[in-house]
Image 1 (tube, rainbow, N blue to C red):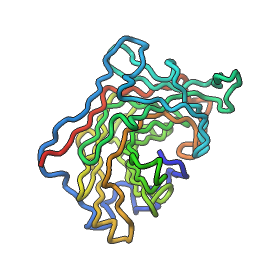
Image 2: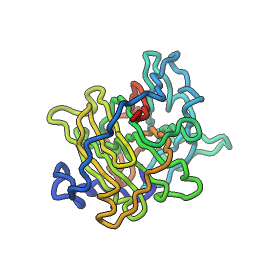
Image 3: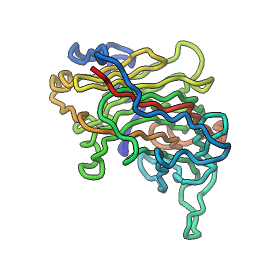
Image 4: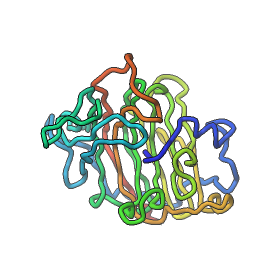
Length: 284
């Protein structure tokens, strides 16, 4: 989920329709050739109310002001915890966070953002999560990966791949987006996937990206719906920066320009439930 403006209209700006074919033949990619070998898996086993494994996940503690977001990310157990049934729960609350210095956050909501930076990082392969998403205006859940050189080259030079973003007011639609130099924020290369019936808030769905030196593609429940290649980027004069390890981020933002602020219909606490996260490498 980018630090700069990411408008819902991005898809319609880039394509004649969000589910139209990719804009050029060079961006068609049939997926990696070879066998995937799992290198990391977290099924979130543990006692009810316990923390996600600190060997894998670091909680971000920050009063957010990116993208007009309205949450304070905390390491509190009410905002991120294991449910005792093999799930990680990221929970947003309508409350101001009492900071360690005794003052209250200026943000009216709390939530959590968990990162694997410095712990689980990989170049290429398959990144996958099975997630039950929330619905409600102003909710912005995301599953994404960020270049591990972020701290040295900054964003968007480090590269960002949004495997899943959902605007809570459109709970039957998710977006998959690529951000890099010259194609970030509202210019991110994006495409949407719409459920034919029902809502992503009705149950678990599997979201994945497959990534190799010659391309990447996004999948929902095993169905590819978006692909990008270095050749396609070169065709439009953009630089492919996805050639180094990236780390995983799971978060539930509240408010922001992606879906606007919550309204009176939005129910709190809001929950994003993750069944597992898996990373695989490609054995050619």
